[in-house]
Every structure is written in structure tokens, then in C-alpha cells.
Length: 257
Length: 254
Image (cartoon, rainbow over all chains, first blue to last red; front, side, top):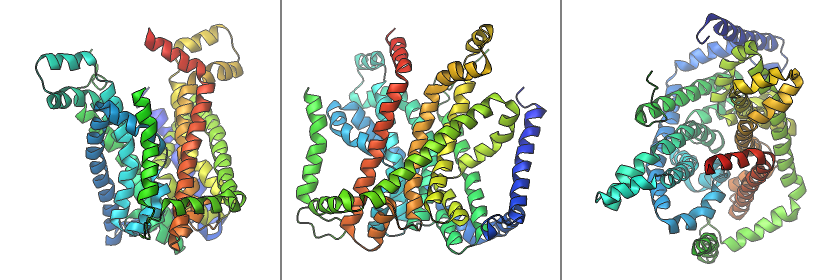
């Protein structure tokens, strides 16, 4: 059934229907100027795509998100290995981590803006704050789930603790880290946009805020469409990267007939 | 035993350290914890409790409730009627790619700054995680279960309420948990973008007017709410899904 013609037809119908409804509602001025017609939005979007400002803010958004993601990945895995390996550290940090886990970065946005100002560093800090904890927690889970037999075997082969950590514990925690990264990557993009929108950090979030404040609704919609596409690309890219990096793990292996 | 002492002691120690280290702080960004707690009490207990705290929480719960019911209902229709699924699938994936907070400016331009806009933003942004999880949950229900239902000649209504809903419940609850977090984030964002009421608005206004202690008090309150809402939801989940959690534990022990 997959890839057959019928679902595709229906998908195309669905998209076409939404575009037509949008166009009709906008032409009827149901929301005044706040809902520009689809045609206007797409032609504005085409104009925006030709400007250097757009590409530099797109670059800023992607750059901040990726840099913060890399920072949180490195710091998160190191912290996770530390917390997961030493029981005392784990118990000492348990309550704090559990408290901070459900607290989204937007909560400390005012503090970040106050101390760092509306800068790229502020966005970077918020994204790291948002992505670090899930990676730490998942790495801890991964370390905890290491097969004790594998650990003991490594020890009886005469491996030292650092070597066991690098060769046994880290690889067996990798799928957990992969899951954390898959969740963290779209989140990094979201937080970057939030930091721009509410905190004035550079990037597409800031552009959206400016478009809204200026009443330039066609650009506003165009920018949101760009963000939707960007979000899809981020999700797709992380899923692909996860498969690539973890192809050796049994949960990712392709079944051979 | 020793570990639990460490576990309980560490956060207490941290708070005590914060209290005493910040005691004589003159740094405008990091006021003494004593001042923050004082402002916390003055602001939230109970001067602005009704006007802002209850308002924010009311929006959060109303928006989340709408998202939960609509998400589960739309999820069921989408999963059970293939043409609908084919039609909305690409749209949903596209909408899911948009950061939920980026939708807030659109709603502001469409509906204005009022409570209605905030509830709509929260409900719509929180809708997708629940809906997608519901669709996945129903698709994951085993064929043998549906065959048995057919053999027993269950009506469509019975099949949905007595078989599909419970079988998809664990997935639905994971979706609801994500929805709740999204709802909380959008609640704050919708208040921070140009409204004058609500905890988020008060916190951002305090920051913009350099009332640092007030800002810290707002951050503390938001953090505590974020934590408590999550705890309450986990308790609810444990209660509703007790049969599932029990069976998982049995399966793992076996």
C-alpha cells in the first residue's frame, strides 16, 4: 500500500483544500488585514528569500542552534557519565535535576536577557540550558543500563576504569544519547526562535517579532512557513544522523531476510 | 540510607549556600535570596494571586483541556478513517515543525491580546503532540485484539471505548505530557508578548524595569509551577494507567 497513488492524491487534495480555504477567507477579509491571502504571502516570501538580511538571520538561527547543540552534547555526555558512574554524585544531584527537568528555558529568559542582553550569547545560553539536562538524564539512564556482565568481563580482561568507560559504558549508552539528541535537536531550534522572539536575540525569531510589531503580516506568515520547513529539515537530519552513527546497534540494524 | 541522606541534603545545602552567599550581595543582577523571598511573598501571596497567578493557571488548564480533548478526538478520527489521515498527514507534519511559540504573534494579529488569544494559542500549540501520539497509539494496536473484538461482534462504539482507547492510553498519556509542557511554555510566551497580565508578563516587566528581585520572584514561581504541574500529571497518569504500569512491571520481573 505504501507509496501507492491514492494516499498521495489525498495528500495533495488536503494541501490544496487548505490553500483554497485560506485564500477565500483572506479575500473575504474575515480578519481584516491580519490574514493576508496565500498568494500575497508566497509572493512576499519569494521577495524575502532574495534579501541578504533574511539569509543572515537564517544563518544566525541555524548557527546558534547547532553550536548550542554541540556544546550541550559534549557537556551533557561528560556530566552524564560522571553522574551515572558515581553513586554519591547521582544521589546528590537527583533532586536538583528532577526539579529542573520540567522547567523550560523560557522561565529563565528574563534573567538571561538581564545579564547578557539581547545578544547571540543570550540565545546560546538559553538553548544550552534547555538541551543540556535531557542529554545528561538520558546519558545517566544509559550508563545505569550497562550490562553488568560486560562490565565485569572487561574488568577481568584487565581493562582500567577509564578504558571500561570509553569502550563498554559509553557505547552501551549510545542509543540513549541518540534518543536524547533526536529530541534535543528540534528543541534547540525552538528555543533559538523563542530567544529571538521574546529576548531579542539574533535570528528568525527577532525577524518575526519585527514583522508583527510593524504590522507586516505577509512577512510574518512567510517567516513562520520558513520555520516550519526548517523544523522539518532539523527533524529529518537528526533522524538520519542517528541512523548513521548508531547503525551498528541492534535496535537500528536492518533485518536481513 | 546514606544515599537518601545525600539526596535530601544536597538541595537543602544548595539553598542554604545561596541564602548565605547572597546575603550581602550588592550585585544588581543577583540580589540576596532574603530579598527575593520577601518580594515573592509580597507579590504572589496574595496581592497578585487572583489577578495574575489564577489568571495564568486558568488559561493554562483551559487551553490544555481543550487541546487534550480535541487532540484525542481528532487523533481517533485521523487514525480510523484512512482518507482523512492521508489528507491531514503532510499538513500535521508541517505544522509540527513550526515552533509553537512562533504561532503566538499570528494569534495576536488575528485575535488581539486578550485572554481568548492566550487560550487559543495554548490549545492549538498543545494539540499536536496529543493528536500525533493518539494516532500512533491506535496504529500500534495489535490486529489480534481487533480480530477478537470482531469475533465478539462489538459495536463500533464499544470497539473505540473499550478496546482502542485503553490500548492506546499509554501512548496518549506520553503525548499529553508533552502537550502539557508545550502548554506551559506557550502560556508564558503569550503573556510575555505584549500583555500586561499574568505571571510571565509581570516577570518580563520586572526585568525591563530593572526590578531584579521581582523578576527573580517571578522566575521562582514559574519554576515551581512548572515542576508541580508535572508532578500532578505524573500522579494522574499513575492512577489512570495503574493496570498498564503493573503489567509492565510483571513482564519485566518475569
